[in-house]
Amino acid sequence: MFLLPLAASSTQVPSAITSALHQTKVALGNPPELSSWVNATDPCSWLSVTCTAGVVTAINLTGLPSTGASTPVPPVLGELTTLTSLTLGNTVLLTGMLPLEWASLTDLVELMVSDSHMNPSLSGPLPSSLSLLTGLTSIDLSSNSLTSSLPPAWSSLANMSVLNLAGNSLTSSLPPAWSSLSNLGVLNLAGNSLTSSLPPAWSSLANMSVLNLAGNSLTSSLPPAWSSLYNLGVLDLAGNSLTSSLPPAWSSLSNLGMLNLAGNSLTSSLPPAWSSLYNLGVLDLAGNSLTSSLPPAWSSLANMSVLDLAGNSLTSSLPSAWSSLVNLGVLDLAGNSLTSSLPPAWSSLSNLGMLDLAGNSLSGGIPPDWDWTGEAVTCTAGVVTAINLTSLPSTVASTTIPQTSSLPPSWTATAPAGMPALHFLTLALNTDLCVDVPTTGATLGLQTSSSSQMPVDSKHFLDDDNALSAIRERAANAGSGVGHRDRPSSMSQNAESSNRKPTGTRLAN
Image (tube, rainbow, N blue to C red):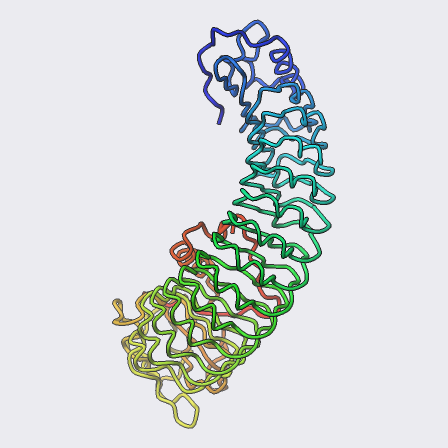
């Protein structure tokens, strides 16, 4: 969208500024959308130009369509020395490096050359000369092809509050010198090729609220010193090569709403001390090498809506105390080594929409207290002996199921009494769990073992990825207070574990 023109000012814009604007129009290929940019008229009346007291202060070329040909970034914009805001998002296909001439824009406060449609393709290094623009508060150069390292010289940008360099090809390390950016609140470096360690020196970034470093090649440990980032609300480090343990000291991050550490090589145990993270709504630790038990103390995380611990090496039992997590919408514990039976107390998890316990060593049966299932399936010596089919929807072919079996009527009830939000339950590959309910259609169904007594087609799960994604997004948005891995989601690059793909079945309402 273009900014509407302001009324012509009584103060005449200097001819040098008018000339620079006209040269910019020519450099962009004289697009018809800039037909109002005529030398004989007042630039303050031009579309996409904003003036303050007769001074050109902002250029916004958002939405300027591409002609299909690439256009070098116009160096002449550097002559617009009165600019405080320069936006080239969703515009023509810009190529080349950021011009060194832009270092003369000393009044610049906001700089954005980015595009959600990946149109701009800036290349080359980040110019250290931008460190001269000490008034900058926001830089967005995301979704380009920028290379080389992060300039330590940018540590002089003391007013910087938002820095987005996601989706480029930046390499080398995270500069410890950036610890001087005391006003930095949002830093997004996701989707690059950054290496080295997480700088402990960044613990001084006291105003940081969103930090996204997902999808890089960062190594080393999680710095306990970051426990001083008290304003941190979103921390996404997924999809790196981070090692070592989860720092108990991070229990002081009391404002943390979303923490994503999935797809790393983290080891050791789940810290019971994290039970003090009362605002935590989304915690994703999937695809690591975490061991030990599930902490009963986490039952105090009352705002938790998404908890993903799949693809680790967790052991011990399912904590009955977690029945207090009444806001939990997604719980994924698949691909661990959990034992014991299913806790009857979990029947109080009324908001649970997705529960994945596949690939563990659970035993027993589905508790009768899980009211949505009604009575438990009858087992004899670990073999299903009774499944009630009387209320099974007609879309399921009865010929594929033993005629003597029975399925509890409440399993197909339109208004289940308990756990009413549960739409996705997977208990597969728990060979000692005595429940096996077949299905051949997109209706109610769950399966928990590979019993040879059941037909082959009943052993396949209905993988409803759209339904599962919707459940995850709904729960994540409710719990974290930020958009689904916008969280920062758009920002975040969720790393799924490469060693498991748990299957599941959507349950009919």
